[in-house]
Length: 253
Ligand code: PEP
Image (tube, rainbow, N blue to C red; front, side, top):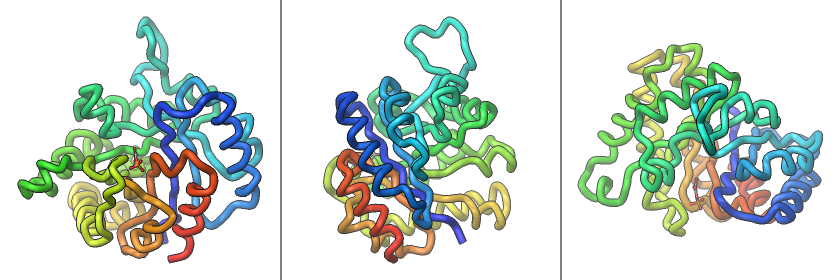
């Protein structure tokens, strides 16, 4: 049995006060751990504020990116050791906004994934096709290419630390959610890729989140799919009601 994992990606949103209030409200509601893992990933500059507000709750802290070196002359960047220092357990890597807006390549993402794991962080590695790629029947090949480029160079013990997030680019922030069948098909493909590259035990144990316009109203049917183990949530993670609704809905299936 894979334990469900719901993570909120706050992206470049909220003021410091808003971030503190949201984390405080989530911590109060989730003081007793539900039967799932929960994380929030605020902007770098609010990590410390949010860590303090989360207190002893069951909510883990994650970052949205990092630079793959422990320290040095890398102006403007943030290292995995700095994230650990601030209490992060997770880091989102290869989000489609970084791939498509910032031009991150699979090679760069793989470097970050390796470095995150070496430092002791657990990466949430995102893969997903664009609308054009889906419409031209390239979904499976794009996912395979991103899996091979960003993840499958890891050895087995490194791979155990990874969560994969399948996030179709056309469903991110658009209100258009993949149908449970569409998402399940890609999740099942990913599990086959893991089984082929590694082994059945690893394929059965790695968690694969779905991301793309997840809401309290659609999470239960997504989570009812055999290969969907959680959600990476953008917009709906910015308000306590909707994020808590997603956590409850994820446990309802
Ligand atoms: C995301 O950015 O990871 C995401 C899934 O966003 P949204 O939930 O807003 O579609």
